Image (cartoon, rainbow, N blue to C red; front, side, top):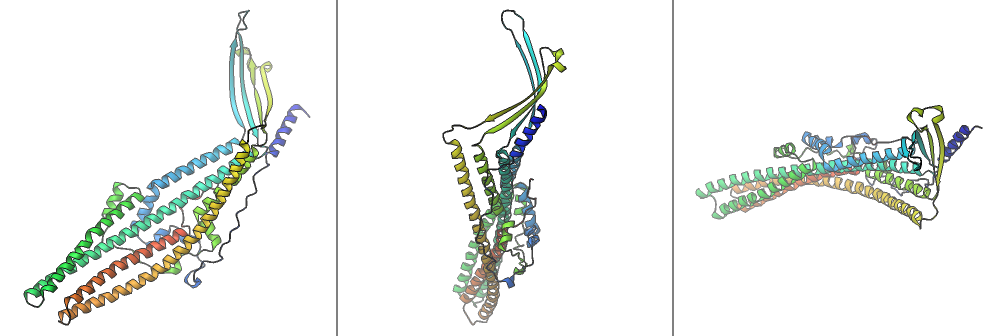
Length: 474
């Protein structure tokens, strides 16, 4: 076997040995998960799949909400930072992959020296291409690349978890703002009604049909309702500013929020709980981006253990050079000036006073921490889903009760006014009925808001959706 063939054989053997890995074999931690959600299956359509969650915020059928969510996904600074972290992780992965490949450099050297006595200068010229390669004998580079890949996926899923949170926050703030505006409308309508009632009592007083007490009660009730308005206006302005910050505050967004129609109110509720998605636990593990992020972070720390262990073993670097060397430019690139070399370098650790052992212990501790975080994330996810479903069903029932209460209060108010005009009761009964009606209408608005927010929170707990595909590098 010729020298060149021996070199090729040795290089191929070392490359094959480089497939070794010192990382522990990754296995997803065993988890005790419930087989089904704690819900009545008759309330849910078990045939629905993840397509139900695509652009789930559009299910509220509110064009202005859709526009705000889209604006937030483009302009929110938290999401921009998350996207930048994904780009950084992708660059780190590219560097890790490049480290596993040979490196080709062009080297040129010119050296002139005077030996001393003769006074003649000697010139050495050298131009060579150097191919260097670290033999990944223990899988250090491969595991570093695997760690970078897992970190990229973890970062990408973290970005989508942030995206999901931003969408949920925008929806929550939007419905709170709409509810505040609805309460402003109710308050203004109440003020107008009580102004009309005061005018009526003034007419009745001049005609001798009303007492001074009834007139003063009507005046006091009007001022009470007027005192409600400034606080509700301030609350709406605060919610508007908070929403503008969420969606990436700019003049266009602020102008749009300020121009919102106060009479629009909250969107209609479909009240159809059967259309909400229901997943068994295994499906939740697939669709929650924070769970995916936690698992890939665990995979990365598992690969880091292999990197730390490989540092205990020798590193082998091969350098092959091909070029030309001569004492003059005219002699370069001639057969006599041809330069060939193949060198190998082995670097083995001998004494490091515990540095490598500490690196391995650190990597193992980080993996243990990542596994705890993974388990904690899953437990929190199931808790969030269970809580969100409970709040959803409770809010729906409360909304229905409040609707019935408002209907009843309207009838009570009409009867109280009729009895008062007929002279069968005092004006205080009318005031009590109207005050109770106002409180019931405000409570209904809050219940409708809570129902909408609860539905949005349930979608978020189930994993939502994301516009961009998760990068899956080979």
